[in-house]
Structures are given as C-alpha cells and as structure tokens.
Length: 294
Image 1 (tube, rainbow, N blue to C red):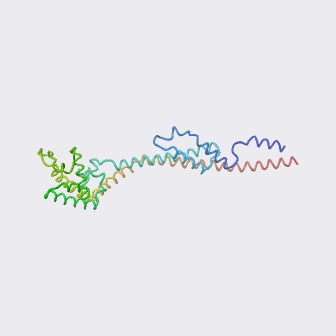
Image 2 (cartoon, rainbow, N blue to C red; image 1 turned 120 degrees about the horizontal axis):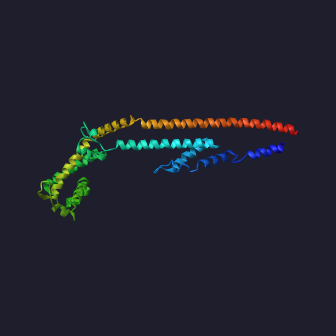
C-alpha cells in the first residue's frame, strides 16, 4: 500500500523541485522573445526591457503559467509607462525650444528685436568678460582707424584682440579672398553697399565696430532677454500641462499595473493556502496508510 502511494506521488512530480530551480525556470519562461517584434519599437533598446522583465521575475518568482503571464504583463506595463514618459519629455523639450513665433514675441521688448532673434541660441555667451573684451576691441579698432594699420598690426591681431581677428577671418571668407596675407588684406578693394569702391580694411573696421557694439548691447541686456524667454517657455509649459491626454494615458497604465499586481498577489496567496491544504491532506493520507500497514 505504501509502495503504490509512492509511485502515485512520483507520477505527479515534474520540473524543478528546489526554489532555485523554480526561479531559473520562471525566468527562462519569461525570456521567450515573444515581444521582440511587437513591443520594442525602432530606436528602443530591447536589453533595457529585458532588464525590467528579469527584475520582476526576481521580485515575484513566478512558478506557473498564470504567474508568468501576470509578471510579463507588469513588465510590459512598466515599459510602456517609461516609453510614455520619454515621449512626453521629448515632446515637451521640442515645444519649449521651438523657434519663437509672432505670438511669442508680441508685446515683448527684446525678443521682437531682429538682433536678439539671430543670437538667441547663444545668449549664454554674452557675459561681463565678453563685454570687457568687446570694449577693448572697439577702442583698438577706433585707434587703428585714426592712425592706420601696418602689417605687424594684422600679424599680431589674433593674440592681441581675438574678437577682431575672428571677425576678420569671417569677413575674408565672406569675400573669398584668394591670397589673404596681411599685406594683401590692407590693399584689397571691395564694392560697398553704396556701389563705391573702398579699401576692404576700412570697411571691415567700420562694420566690426558695429558688430562689437551689438555684442556689448546683448551683454548689457542678457538678463532681461533671458527673463522674457523664460516667460515664453513658462507659458508653453502651462499650455502643455493643460493637455489631459498624456495624464489619462498615465492613469490608465497605472491602474492596469496595480490591478495586475493585485491579481498576482491574490493568486500567489491562494497558491500558498492551497499548498498548506495539500500538505495537510497528504499528512492525513500518509498517517492512514501507516495505520493500515501496521
């Protein structure tokens, strides 16, 4: 009698018996790759999803198909929530950093200025230090206008006044001079906006001073420009926050996640209770068999 009971128990057994074996088997069952073609979108990293999936497997140790399915659902819902958060972040940054339109600039003192608009992407560079360098460069350019320049002035320009040197290189490239040596730069002639011929160097000094004066103006008004820009971004952000669609999507994912989590915990609790009942029943049967054997 005892022997036949032993055979019956053996026929019902199968698969991993130890906790470690069940843990490994459950993780293997999750790694089927079934979601590779349907869940992971182009540009997403499948390994990141697998890390989430593995973490849920380590947390809940699914042992049957119902638990495996629910743990997988939790991983998928978590992944979709991360995707939605990334999407919202990209959309928000794109909207905040989009070029200003007419309504953004309307009734603003600085943002409506064309000289601000062309420099808005680099407004952070207009510091006190830059203003000081620009003031020194203007003083030098005005001095050269009066006394005239020699070859040595141009050759030492990069070290003495880098702001003017960078502008000189910019203007030389704009006019596509073929042999821009210091000597030739001082002798080149161009046609100015009035259609008259004049020395390139004289024209450059005049325009360079204007550019440097604008640099100083931007440095002086940087704080107010950034204040107006921040106000525009705040307004855009408020408009985005009033859009309920992302919030509804987040709420749906959150509800589904915690509903699935609750179902998983209920199932695991039910299994634990059933295992206690099964152990108790087997103890009763084994005790009865031992009595019959005796």
